[in-house]
Image 1 (cartoon, rainbow, N blue to C red):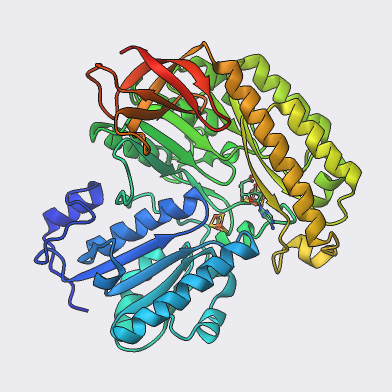
Image 2: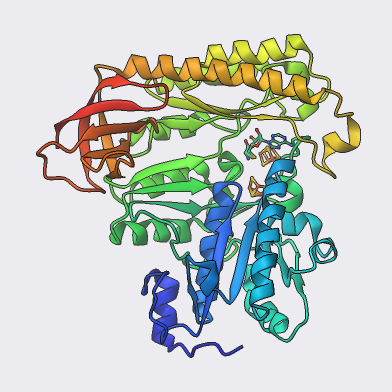
Length: 477
Ligand code: SAH
Ligand code: SF4
Ligand code: F3S
C-alpha cells in the first residue's frame, strides 16, 4: 500500500480531531480514498468514526462518492433478519461496481462480520475483508494483505478494547451533536438478542478519556453529546493503573461530563430498566444540561414473556420504574422499544404490552416484530411459533397506539415554552429552524427577525403540533 507519508504533527492533529475535513477533496493530501456506509444502531455509526480515524491516520481520505473509492466499507447490523437482507442487497450493488473497477477492495465491518466470520467470504465472493467490531486497529495490516490478493479476516472479540485513545473523525456530523462511546459489548443475555454474540463482553471506557473527548468537542463548538452503550447504567470504570481509586459509576460519569460546561447538553442511550438507578435520576435532576429524556426499552408488557426474554424484570417492576422517573423528573420524556410476536406470545400477553404502553405514556417508541436470530438463546430454546401475519397485526396495533400516545403527548406541550438547541434549517422550509427540546422532541419554528444560528439555544413557545413534531415561535434568545 502506498500510504501517504504523514508527519508526526499531522498524525497528532488527526488523533486529536479534525485537522482536515474528513471529506477533503485535495488529491495531494490522500493517495487513496475510502467510502464507508453504516447500518444499525448508534454504536455502529460511532464505530465508523473510529474506523475513519484509523484510515485517515494511514493516509486514506474519506469520500462520499463510491465511484471515487479505492476501498468500500459497509458497517453492518445483525439485529433482525431484515437488517442483514439490506446489507446483502447493498453488497450486490458493490459487486457490480467492482466489476468495473477490479482493484477496488470491499470490506464488511461490524456485527454481521462478527456473526458470519469467514463464512462471509464463502457466501459473498466479492468481499475482500471481514473485520469484527473489536478488531479495527488491525485494519491497516489487513488492507495491505488484501491489496496483494489475499483475503483479510479478523473477528477476534476482546475483553479490553474500547478504542479510548482514538479520536473519532466526525463523519456526518452537523458540528453540533456528537456521539461518545462509553462502553462496548453487553453482558445481558436477552434471549432474542444477537448483540452479546456480535459485540462480546461488556467493558467500560476510561472515564477521563470520555471527559476529554467531551471537552474537546465542546472546544470545537459542539453543543450536545450523547453517551452511548448497550446498557449505560452498568457503566463501571476501575482504573487498572490506580487500583486503589474508587470505581466510577454511570451517575458519576454523567456528572463529570455535565460539568464540562453548563451549555453542553448531555444525553445518553440505552438504559436498561433493571439497572437504571435512583442516583442517575437524581443526577439528571441536579444538572440543567443533562437532558430530561430516558430511552427505557420495555420489549413486552407481559411478565411471562419478559421472563422468556430473560429481561430480568416484571411488569410491576417496570411500572415502579416509570413511577420513580415521573416522581423525580416530572418533565422527563420517555421512549421505548417494543417487540411483538415473541415465542408463545398470546393475545392476552399482547394486551399487556398495549396497556403498559398506555401506563407509561411513551413519547416515542421503536417497534419491531420478532425476528429469530441464529445462535441466540431463544432460537435454541423456543419455537418461533407466532405466524408472521399475527406478529405484523400486533405490530400494527402497537404502532397505532404509539401514534396516538405521541400525539397526546405533543398536544400537552402546546402553550408551554422549551429551551431548544437549534440544529439547522428545517428540511421543508429554509425560513424555519429545527431543533430539539431537552425531552428530545423536535420543534420547528420560523426564523423571524432573531439573530441566531445553528448551535444557539432559544426559548420557543409551542403553538401547535402534529403527531411527530411540535411547531412554535421564538419567545426569547
Ligand atoms: N441495548 C439496547 C438495544 C439493543 S437492540 C437494549 O437493551 O434495549 C435495539 C432493539 O432491537 C431492542 O431493544 C429490541 O427491541 C430490538 N430487537 C433486538 N433483537 C430483536 C429481534 N431478534 N427481533 C426483533 N427485534 C429485536
Ligand atoms: Fe441485547 Fe439485551 Fe444487551 Fe440490549 S441489553 S444489547 S437487548 S442483550
Ligand atoms: Fe445492530 Fe450490532 Fe447495533 S447488531 S443494533 S449494529 S450492536
